[in-house]
Image 1 (cartoon, one colour):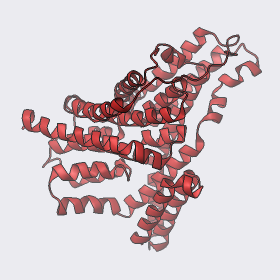
Image 2 (tube, one colour; image 1 turned 45 degrees about the vertical axis):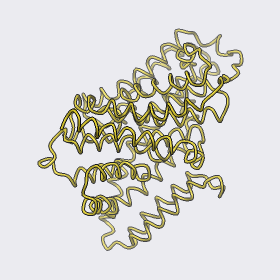
Image 3 (cartoon, helix red, strand yellow; image 1 turned 180 degrees about the vertical axis):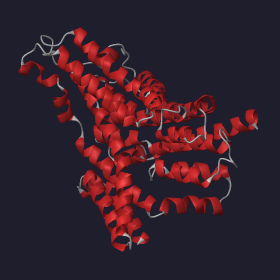
Image 4 (tube, one colour; image 1 turned 135 degrees about the horizontal axis):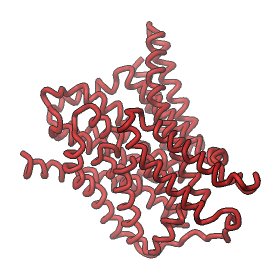
Length: 427
């Protein structure tokens, strides 16, 4: 059974990677892969009720991620419909590719620590559409945004789901993880940034802006209200989580509900035709549903590997065969580029005892860095990558050729910095 499930997962993964060659949409492949993995599992299982309960439990967790993605995308679409991003793009006047790349990546890095890497990637990719017309240049910037978003999320307890898991589990504390990981995470971004900057030349061409037909029905005040309400709502999500202890998707839905009410109020005096393009209903029609279904399929497939014990077996095997934390932890980070880092971290948290490795131990900090940044190595290795892939239609093979090696160099540079930092200052 396990061999069949792993084979289905590998075949599905290859079909996703070669989407453009085989001419089959990756969302269809991901859904088939996920369903087939669970179908094989339940067919070969003697306790089918237990398998169904496992699937229901996983679906509860996965739906939270999907609703978060849907809510964040809708908020971003709504801000975009009101030209809200013009507030930022109008202030970025440089057309120099190098300067613009550094500006975008640094904004992404620090914004990701306040929001999270998924939301930040959605916001920044939307900004790139307003700033860069050339498709190839925009894809390169989007690839660097993925690296920056994942690096920025790793050093903050609310910036990445794996860091949040370790924080909630008591393996790390908020202040300590920020102090210990901000520099390794920054190195993870700056090293590939320098490499790209050396090779990057010329100026970007901005998209041609047609005359604004919304001017008569959309005021600057309305634009500003929607922008600051939307961005404020996204920033409030981690605060909402801390106060209520509800999962992040509840915070996003709360922010979307507030924004929905605000749009209804500020456009209530307008004709139906005038306010149609500014409604949440219109924004919901524009979000990238195939990307959400792709995400669902991938996560369902990975949950099958987790439920059949494959991920725990890999973690246990590394612990027994390798033994050295300086090799095991970076390897887990590399695996997170292929397999979702959430079940990997969950397996690691169960494998290492807090009595042996207490809060803020070397292993937990290093694990937070590696799991948070390792997903950048492949485009489907992180939520930020999957979101950008759907929004910009980034090809798996293109990312592998152009961005993977940059992400890997940054990943290992940051890991080395952390090990040296720990040896020199904290050992």
